[in-house]
Image 1 (cartoon, one colour):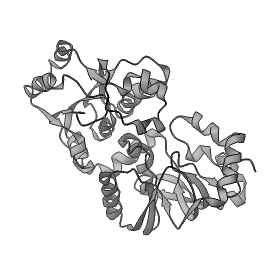
Image 2: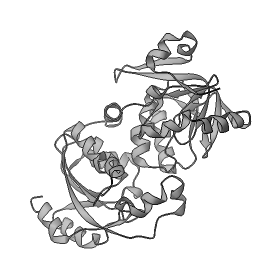
Image 3: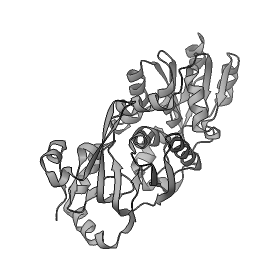
Image 4: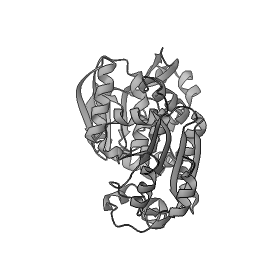
Length: 346
């Protein structure tokens, strides 16, 4: 049977489909969330549920590049999917929160995590990808504890398809809605803006600043705090970004934390030179957040430098062509005088 897609109106018009959904309303946020409460098949990359009667719901469960969902409606996918259905590993009575297959902080925080505030059960099994870091698991556990939700166990998913029985998966939200949820639920108080912060990427696989030592010396003379978010808990990151009056950072998922900055905070993103259309999502990612939150955004371009630190496993998720040609996966070299002129007033 071919997989069909039902839009929101289609769900409402079909009683047998509508009965598979719960509507969870968060009073604090004044936001409603549709939660699929049924038996469903699920892949652990897109977390795109397909019901046992082969219905899917792109309106509710799509995120990121929408072209990736075209695969679910091809003859080839349908053939393989139907052949594998009976042999999939099964889980029951589970809430599927999901997480990034590469443990990407931006994707975890913006796409997957906001849905945690629409779990209505008080005792749960919760499914995330096995690649999630201990830091991310601790963060989820702490938030659920604050929400007075008990975790019976984590269900860890590998790169595969699964069947979930008597389980739930909340819908995904638009980025602007996710930001509203995160800011309201995670930011305890808006702090006085007083910190100048530089975010280092020296422990990262790409976009390391080759001449960072020279840059840091300049920044320290202007009383900048130098941080590496890989050595910080998520709560510590939120605390520092919410106290900042200026953030400078090579582009990377740590900049997701600018959602906790107060209005008017200065954000300077050090970016590579982008040359291809598919890189626009990288180029505009943090500018878009700044526009939503009225942050003062500026960027400075750096020259790309080849690096040999990328893990070959990353090719499973990113095309070899993009890895080879895109400056996003290289290191960076910034012209010192150009940088000094940029920050001279801070």
